[in-house]
Image (cartoon, rainbow, N blue to C red):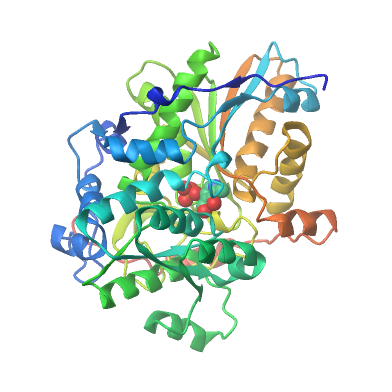
Length: 462
Ligand SMILES: Cc1ncc(COP(=O)(O)O)c(C=O)c1O
């Protein structure tokens, strides 16, 4: 091997002891709105859906840091944290950039037992549920990474797990379903015929490809019907999930210090926003406090372009209108994204905190088509040695674009991105590309406008 990548590893005691509560840093104060009353959700309503520990964190608007219990830190250690930071010297070489001037670093969340950053919040949510005596958790999953992480966490803590998996992903990635079932989870295709919401969508279209919005509605209906034993876990979007992911950004900042660098550009792929926000969290705090001024970029799928083509408004978190309403960048909760392989990015809205940061112009966003991102993933695989998830390929493509632009302008640039997961269950995406069969989908302004026209009107908070 002519080039060997340097790697930066933190010792176990450096595993963060607190989460960063960016809601406080950003001055976030808007309430979640109940879909039943269209008024601010009461704590009682939230407690019906989520474990109490999660509700407390979701509604904490005063502490800048929230302690992580030792038992939970031990679980993170067990799940391979702290994860490594790599200097992508081999990718730099493949791009033909001068490595003294342009430096690419990436954090590798793919080393978690189920292959992505999702274990960071799965372990926390299941830990709080277990402490409360909850017996079962219901959830949705898109790409399957979240469902896998939750199934793993439930197996570790001894809780039952029920997963509604978006049909398009279920069929593209049958082995994700098998992985979850191996951990003991019950997995159904969404829309399913075991919930009222699922049946409604199946009546309209027996082969409905599903969406995260619909799968969320099914999981919430399950929780409401089994409220004595079951609570809901969400893999992204809400403040508490973003909070859990801040351990990634905190580790990354320490590791960049080990490398004696600070990123000019911070990049993460964006589905609901937890990966992007968690990975950029510690850098965003520096930016808000005026200590540094990194450019922070969310890379989304062109098939679900809420940050680049959506509106900033109150919207439902799900298509069946059972989950809370919040202010977010959205293309409308009725919007059904094309069945791209990056299933984890097929969500109509962005997290409230990401949306606020975008509205305050602290961050920016780009959107990519699937043939372009898979091309970037193949270059990454050949140079860095492992296959990235299609979702993560969005961040890789933006890192490549940033490096090329800096090279053209003869600028110095330190680029950091988070590789949120591996793609070993996503080989169909790579196979389709290699066989020349991978499709791109055009999305008209008209179809976005139509779904945005149906946004709810919330009095008093617009
Ligand atoms: C590998 C991977 N990266 C990123 C995402 C998007 O995550 P988020 O909702 O946190 O933006 C997902 C979602 O499933 C994923 O599986």
